[in-house]
Amino acid sequence: MGLKPVKLIPGMISLIIILLIWFVIPAPDGVSQNAWQLLALFIGTIAAIIGKALPIGAISVIAIATVALTQVTHPGDAKASLDAALSGFSNSLIWLIGISMMISISLNKTGLGARIGYWLISLFGKRTLGIAYSLTFSELILAPVTPSNTARGGGIIHPIMKSIATGFDSMPDDPASSRKMGRFLALVNYNTNPITSAMFITATAPNPMIVNLIAEGLGADFRLSWSAWAIAAIVPGMISLLVMPLVIYLMCPPEIKKTPNAPQLAKRELAKLGRFSLSEKITAAVFLLLLLMWAEVPEMLFGFAINPTTAAFIGLSILLITGVLTWDEALRHKSAWDTIMWFSALIMMATYLGKLGLVSWLAGAVSHGIDTLGFGWILSMLILVLVYVYTHYFFASTTAHITAMFGAFLAAGIALGAPPMLLALTLAFSSSLMMSLTHYGTGTAPVIFGSNYTTLAEWWRVGFVMSVVNLAIWFYIGGLWWKVLGYW
Image (cartoon, rainbow, N blue to C red):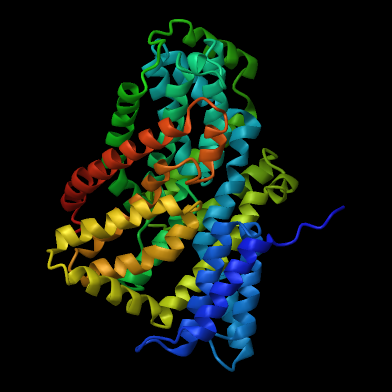
């Protein structure tokens, strides 16, 4: 078996960046030497992730080892440096996402995810637009309990979308055929994903990292709960989900607009799935229980608080006890364990950049640059958000983008006078909405774009328009909703 070492060019670029910052570029005034050295390791790690020098989990192992070895967090103290390097693993949000990803295996294994999608199409699928809304709200139902947006949009909803499109002879790799229906449904399939990812902490892996970064930026005692996030997102999120298929319908209208046979096609697929099985009933019950616990219902009714991560462990335990999932299946879920590894490394580095004062220094530099333009906080905040969102054209990973920029932009906006919670929520939700821009913006994009129902130009054009529409909805309507809630 041949070796699969680090990719030479991105690996060398990453190493050169680290060495330049570490040895050549002097630390600015107000920044300690070890903080500057940690920044060198951090930027080098992000560069390696962007360049895909190795899988992100492998890069994270190297980052943890390097932080411990160089002792940049605690100069001269090897044990404290190792403890700091491993500190990310003690973050409960990491385990919330990892365990929730294991739980979501049951959606595919039992067929519950497909059943929900086909059931909605059987009800509302007499028009192509109805099929689009059925796919959209199927993903919304799955979003709270599917932390992998790729698994949700690409692994569960996309096969259903392809099944419907091919059932109407709308085939990929053929522009004339794809325009019948497949192009429109594929674009809706993808552009649903950023919106549902923004609506729940547990809808995409980087969201808990954002919760962590907001807590660090607004004070250690502040923690955005699962229910507070969901309540803040529900109004702009639902509006975006209702508007998005209509916008795409106008931009890329399907040639087949009426689909009287779609409900029958969906019913045939439901018949193949058979009767609602015991494993599906258990899975549905576990998901309902998780939603109740995450929404803090036990605390409201009985005064008994359950931590969201504890709730996730309870859900997984029930699935293991009942045999709906086996431990071997949980162990084989590479994405979950990979997420736990890279999450812990990036949260650790971001946390210590804050503790060592680097983030506040960088925020001061950014806010000073914008402040010299003489704008008020509203326009300054808008500039920050737009820069944050549209730099995603340069990132193939939302995780890398968020880790590199979120903390500094949050601190910079607060320094410019923006209301902290308004800014925090806008940046938090924008971190998912920016996925719409490119065919490499998140893991779901290559899956759906790779089915070849749409051209690159159509994908980017629709993605840019949807980014503008979504930002307008979340910034203006969302901002008013958060004002009503008293968040700012």
